[in-house]
Image (cartoon, rainbow, N blue to C red):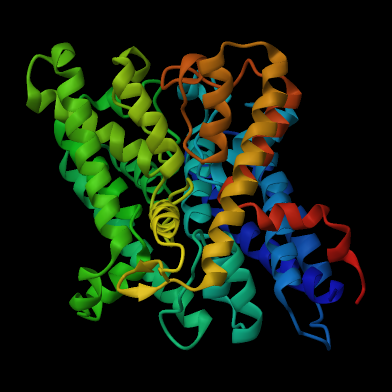
Length: 480
């Protein structure tokens, strides 16, 4: 284990995080909020720790799989602790565990909140909450790699550990250039959404923070009633469409830019993703139409909520806890599925669902024809056995984590809808669930134990299990 290189890399990441906190610091000065010290202290702490760790590059710069996983896991925990300090120092969230929960929810783009009245919070802190979504959406380490010069061998393992999905492909021959291309696309889509929201009459500050929340598929709102506050079909559809766009694998946009349209036709994940969104929105619209009188109005609400839940954003325009049970069950299923691999969305990922279904189909064929040889194909190519095993292993570990977390949270003796969906919502980085954690509720009433469990779930869900799990493996910390 190359401890010196791990410390050096995390140190540089801390310096980048400190730089990102300058934005809310300047906003605090602009609005004369009187909480400048709430940003100065964590900035100084982050710079001091980062400089101490990264002041001198180590002679041995080799990083391998386990070092990459450890860097990702430790980095996300450390930046969440530092990112929580502005809330705690300002006393706008007086409980440190609540501050950590809120910040982890931000960086992991979950959007679950302990705030009862979000509108009382300072604008700079509202900006910081949503900015953590934007930073965490594409990945804090990917952001750092886009800034710093990194050798390909070092960046590979970190980028694979941080980017969601079973397969990560480089867009160019260098990972640093790939990171920069991803962020150029990310920034372009974010700016485009801000422009569209401004045309809809949304104020500039509101447009920026909601674009951050959409881009990172996070869903922190600045109004107690979330997007429903604006009561605008135009805004609903703009945010709804952009949520869907940010749930697409970003490699797709690169292929579009390079005009490689033939590659898109065979993309199974994109077809399934679009199909699930459309079919779910139509079924729910028909199911809730008696509540909204017309199909057009019902589709407006159903499309927005399907987009929000499947991309794990978590914005709301309606209290879907009051919808018919069929609609609620579909939404819970979408919580589990999630968005595409290589997107900013959470969940199991559509590609894993596709592979699992094809594995099941192969098993049926094998049972009918034991001597037959059947492969699993996606995008016109045979899926390698290593990937198939990885998908199966991920699903098993995912279900174990989910089950244990539900058991721990059930100690509080809350109703089953709240208990189960609170864990599903946090582990899949969605935000709202059902019961008391629905779109009009929050996570404030949970115990310290449950909040810590769900904070771990959020990190596990965002980093896809292994970077967090590896931190507790004795084998990883051996010197050899």
